[in-house]
Image (cartoon, rainbow, N blue to C red):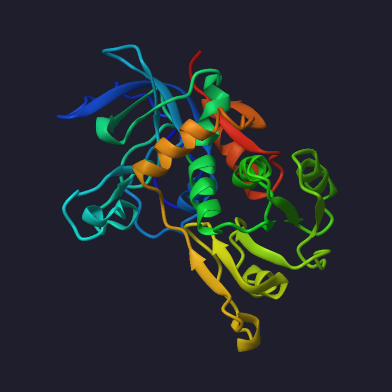
Length: 317
C-alpha cells in the first residue's frame, strides 16, 4: 500500500520483493500495526516523508535466510557517531532514518531493514498481537520511564499506547487515572477493565492530584489541562511525535517545580528492555485486524477515534 502524496488515500501496487543491501535483512511481513504516526504521515502533519512511500513501522515478520521471527520498529538507522549516538541518545540523532517515513515500511508483503535495528519478538505472542508492542509499547515504555516513579499516573487519550502502559503501570504498583474524549464511555470502560481506578473525560477533574501525566492524544490544549491536574514536583510527558499548538497558560500552572517534557522516538535499549518486560507483566494487546488492502479503512477508523486498542494489518499467515 503506497502513499503518493500527503492527503491522498493509499494505493495498492504490485512490486517485486525489495532487495536487501549490505547489513540488511529481507523480511516477509506477517503483521504490521497501524500507528497514529502513520496517520500523521499520511495526513501531511509530518513534513518530509520519502515519496512514494510504503508506511508502517510496527512490523512482525520472518527473516528469509534464517526463518527467525523479528520485529522492525520506527527507528531504522542512525549514524552511530554523532554526540547523541555516542552518549546513549540515538533517538535524537540528526541523521536518523525512520521506518515508514524515510524508509519503506510494513504495509507490504516484504520489507528490508538494517539488522542492527531489528528485535527478536517475544515467544507467546501471535504475530498480530505482537505488532503493537513495536511502537505503541516501546513509546509507551519510554514515556512511563520519563514519568519517573509517579504513583498517581494520568493517561490522556486511551488508545494503543495507553492501553499497554496501563497494564505495565498497574504491574509496577502505580495507580492509573484515564482521560478520554468527552462522552467516550466505551473507552472509559475499557480503561477501567485494564486496571484504571478512575476514568472520565479530559474536562473532568481527577479525584486526586496526579504525580505525573502522559499525553498520548496529539492535542496541545491537553498540556495546560494536565498541568492543572498535576501536583507540585510532577511531570507532564508529551508522548507523540506531533501535537497541535500548545496554548499559552499562566505560570502558576508550571510553578512548583512541575516539568513539561517530550519523548522523541526510541532507542534500541528501550526495545530490549520493553520486549523483555512485556511477557512478565504480561502485556495483552487488544487489537482490531484488517487485511492489507483495507489499510485506508483502518486509518479512517483511527482518525475518527473508533479503534479499541490497536489496529493491525494482517499481511500473511
